[in-house]
Image (tube, rainbow, N blue to C red; front, side):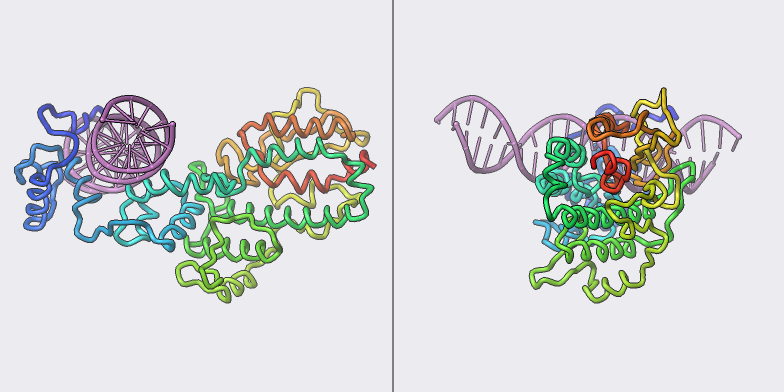
Length: 362
DNA sequence: AATTGGGCCAACCGCACAACG
DNA sequence: GCGTTGTGCGGTTGGCCCAAT
């Protein structure tokens, strides 16, 4: 530590490069290679720091740099990779020949991010935005539940929502599996490569779209001729990948009837401890036969905020049997006071399927 | 014609980490 | 093992350009 940045050296020029400087730099590197960046400016006759020279070369002067607008394919690839890699611009750039990390970063910040936001997706998680999900319980609370339940097609409606929740849960579980392990190494590690991950997500996503429900617009891509594409992956390939993926280890959500009287905590949660909201008041938690805890999955933890199934250190329950009124308002509270500022879609299986809630509502 | 606000992007800044002596 | 150096990386900034007012 204690090393001062090379650019702190006084007398060195900063700011935009002149054509003369560019020429000197290009000429020198073409002749000698860059070698030590620190020594280069002096040898090349430039009054710049080495870092500035390196940046100028790698981001602008390098002969293999592709300039100009990003193509549709490049845009899709960036979205795709970002959904898997996050802000690993250099890693993303390595998949886009001729594009620099800086260029991709700028393109992301000025175009793609806004695009995703406009589409209602969280640009960081590539999932529907948290505020949308946190508002859904509010919408539910506002809805007239009696009217819904009296409606002849309400079961069909619930079944459809449940099917959507299944897709959500599976996607989240996959995303969790593909996350790099945290520093403490507590979570399972993935053995998938980036492209395998993308293909898998793509396959799930395409199934979702087939069902009329698109959850990962940034992962599923349609070329103008209608075929899914990613790095040459065809729909047929995707389907075969999808067919080859076993979901047996995933929560078997489809087997749970909406009005089932079985408990839901064990059936809809992944193999790990179910994740629950942390900020619900747990100081006077009551658990017992007379109090069926209403538990929520949550899409993150302090260690891994975007991980859908990371176990919560302190499971939290509602303090009394949920009633039609209190459970919904508690739910709203829970969602709005989520520790991590995000309510993952995984809330929904619980919300939709929790038997005690339905009992109380009936 | 002048001003303003937003988009865009090259460049800078500071941190992290590997390599080296 | 420790300090220093070189480099890579992601976030941020500053300034140019242009359309809207």
